[in-house]
Length: 113
Length: 114
Image (cartoon, rainbow over all chains, first blue to last red):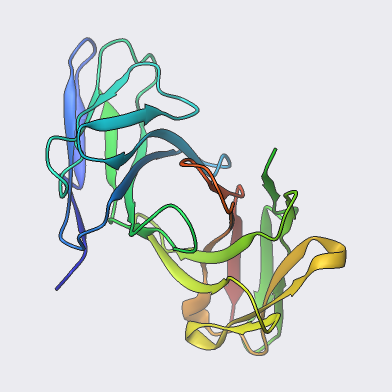
């Protein structure tokens, strides 16, 4: 089945550690996105990528990094510079930039311990 | 700048009652409009979308939405709510140009009481 797979579903991080969240899609979509979701704040865009080897910062990119070496993969690294990383992270993809909806993965809940 | 407002943070309805969730947007041209639903701890699922044409759009699970350009609104409706509809609902607007062009509201949480 085509879709977006995020892993792991739950992730725990110690203070000062970097962690990487995986996002893989087999929909052959060009565009991929990472969102952060906190209660009452909706979805906030962290990074997005329109094509391989290219990505742009979203509204809250500080403390995060991404790569897009393959069309189907868009991993997100939460670095130690992110002061409040505990949140629910959603990856999404779209076939193109206009007249298309976003398809979402099931999310990763990151908790700092 | 594009923006989406969902004025109701939380709505409670009785099972079998009708439902309307409000969504207002700000955009200078004709937008693309979406409604998504999210169950706790899950990703977002598309309920329906509007790109052009008929302003009354039918979606999955018995939902519909109406685009009203004069009111900059895209309200979601369902004539009879089921307990399984309890979830969080997000309205989103897509712009016609630009790379980062999908904007979400802050969501409305729906509680259904028996």
